[in-house]
Structure formats: C-alpha cells, structure tokens
Image 1 (cartoon, rainbow, N blue to C red):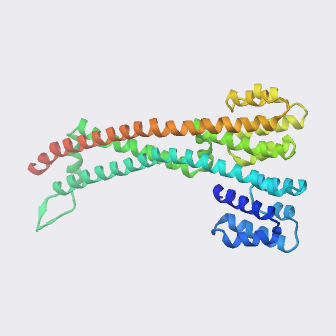
Image 2: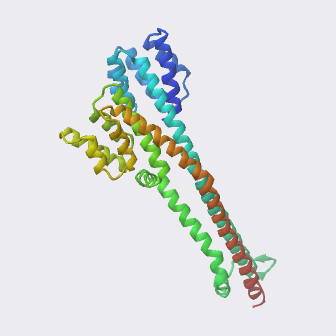
Length: 340
C-alpha cells in the first residue's frame, strides 16, 4: 500500500471528524475521492461494514489493513480520541514513505546502471558475433549461406587474450545483473540482503521504532507493540530479535537492559537509546526513530554521492575493455576468415 496515500487519507479523515462530520459520512466521501487501488478497496470494504452497522474496531479487525493501523484504530476508539490517533498515524506513514522513497531512490540508480551496462554489453557482444558470422560465411549465389560456426570458433580461438577481453566483461555483468534480479524478485532473499545494507537496515529500524512508539503512547502493552514490529517485516532478521524480546517479557525476564546487552542484530546504539530512556520506553523508541531515520538519510546520500559514480566508472571500464577486445578480435579474426 502507498504510504503517502495512507497518510493523506488519515489527515483528511481526522480533519472531517474534528469538524463534526460523522464517521460514516466521512468515509463515504473520502472513498469517492480516492484513487483506485488496494488502499481504496480496503477502505471501501471498511466503509461498507460500518454502514451496515458494524463498529469501526470490528470492521477493521476483519479487514486486510496493516496490523498497526487496525490496532491504532481500536486504541483511538477506546480512548475517544480517534482524530488525534489518525494524525499520529498520518505522521508515521508520511515520514516512513518519505524515508523509504529516498532510500529506494538512492538504491535504484546503481541497479539501473548495472542493468543498463549488462544490456549494452550483450548488444556489443552480439554485434561482434554477428559481424564475425556474416563475414565468415562463404559467399554463394548472391546471398549469404548459413555461417560456418566451426570455422568461426577456430578463428576466434586464435585471438586468445583479446577474445577473453571480449567475453569476460559481458559474462561478469550478466551474472551480476541476474543476481540482482534474483534478489529483487524473491522476497526472502530481498529482505535478508537489504538488512545487510546499512541504509535499508537503519530505515527499517526507524520505521519499526516509530510504530512501537505510537503503540506505547496509546497504552498498548510492550508485548503487543513488539508483535506489531514483528508483523511489519516478517522475513527480516529483525523479526527474531523482536520475537525473542517479546517472549522474554511474557516469561517475566525481558528487562530492557538484558535485551540491549544480548541482542546481536541491531546496532549497539539502538539498545543504548532504549536503556537511556529509563521507564519511558515510548520516548526511547521515538528517539531511536529519529536517530536511525537521520542515519538512513545520510547513508542514502552517501550511496548517491559515492557508490553510484564508482559503479559508473566500474561498468564504464568493463565496457571499454569489452570494446577493445571486440576491435582486436575483429582485426585478428576477420583477415584469417576472409583469406583462408
């Protein structure tokens, strides 16, 4: 679901409820103004249940809305302060959407560079192969016959080192592009690989910390708040840490100091921020959200400033090597093919 769309919806709904518009009327009006998509379908389903007489919390519990959203709606209704809760959710989803948009944007440039270089490398290799095949084919009857591939491979092998310069870059770039595509298309691999990159890990921690802080400010038990963090990225290595802490609390052994000392997945500063907050864990998680969001933005900027230019130089060098290899192969192989 688009987090900016969720944030905008919550802001509008909060304003309507504050102005005294009944929930049923506010939901119906907003449904008619929303863009088509998954979020609109969920809100339309929620609205239909509310219009049929179901309570907001019961309707939300039967929906496919994000777990944090469902629990916060319930907390807002229970406290009688639903507009303020909606504003908190709007801030959470807006900040999270902006941060992840920045992070994904920074990561997309290296990927685009890699896929583009792999495509150019394949085109260059294909053109070289085609030229060798066409020129090496015997001329007969005013048209080209089927290329003699045995002759082509024999002549290509004579080029030796320069044939390696032609083929090695394309193989390397294609393998790297296929690996990147595999990680992008397989959710479990994508989540685990992203967690190993500081920019994604810290953005993930900022988002989870923000969710836990909101839940704790609305008087949810810490175990439920941690369960919400677990549900946000179910295949992430962070899930094990959240789950371990939640189970320890349920067993009466989950002091914040113990969690900070024993966990190995999160940066040490994360545990220190929670411990330094004392009894006010909501403030500790909010501070962690601020710190790790700033760190993620810094990592994203460095990704753009350092990694992208370095990758451009790397793939540019590989393409240059491939071009040199192609030119030398053509100059070495074509004469032997034409005059033998």
